[in-house]
Length: 411
Image (tube, rainbow, N blue to C red; front, side):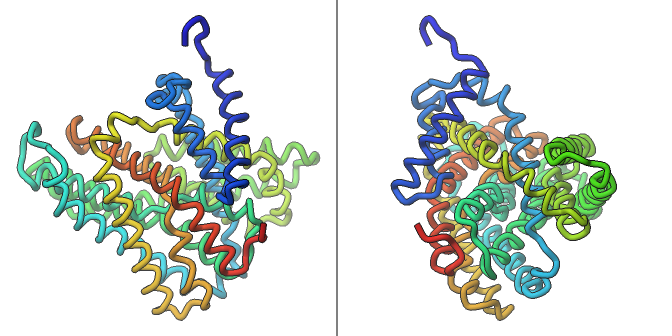
């Protein structure tokens, strides 16, 4: 940048201020603030304006994603209040399974059928089964996930409450568990394809289940320790310190054990809201820092945009967005009808399940050991393109659903 090279602290300051202004502009244009954050990140990205150095986006700021997802997962878990879930529990489960499987199957089938005609993988060795099938399986699996960050940010922005909001947060929380299970199956099949003779029923069925159970157990242990620690906290300001310490510790341990930090922290939040006597204090303390976390998380996500790579995989990214949207719509409508969900849920929930972000990207990065370097680059940039498109156009649909259901504050 000429005579002045921007550093991490200056970049953080710029992201906070420009993200705030982008959010205000988005509100003025009647979009949720999340959309403004992402657009600002894209404009500041290394491939558009080059204002933010690539090394900051790809390396030094990676911890922002981990920290933000820990806070978001804890908050989503805290939205699962048992007394409310009992009223809608059956419909949440049925809708979740229906929409997640529909998104996976539709995306997998169309990417498998069309990608040989869209992507030129001629430089890679191997047949359709060794090249395009792994691509379709893994991308299909991550398409089942829904972005809790975008949805939670919008729900909090509009202070939404009601059956649609409760069902939405419950389905989103379960979505990641289903996506992790599907991803585990997909990666095992891919590994079996690439490593002939190494097929194992245990690996295909057992590993995802172990990850789910292990993550829930870890979250339960941290949650109960946090519940036991809270009576010792005397100052209101100290609640935030203890909460952040607990959820960051939970994420770190989960990562080291190859478990899911997202599911583990959801379990912490779930236990706190349902078992802790002063649970309101443990969530109110966190609400004070949620907005800065959302600003950083979404602006940095937008800054990952790479214009040159998007030109190569842009059509496939658009295809993934369309397939996933269609799968979520069909699956949600079907599940809501089968479970006899409330009318507002049947009419509008599908619109609110369109965002996808951190979980999908996190899972796709975990696929690196199972595919070739060339295929990994294609997967990452294709999913990143789909995430950016989705995160720009999907938040207004969430706002639309909440307002139509009468659960969002009218502007």
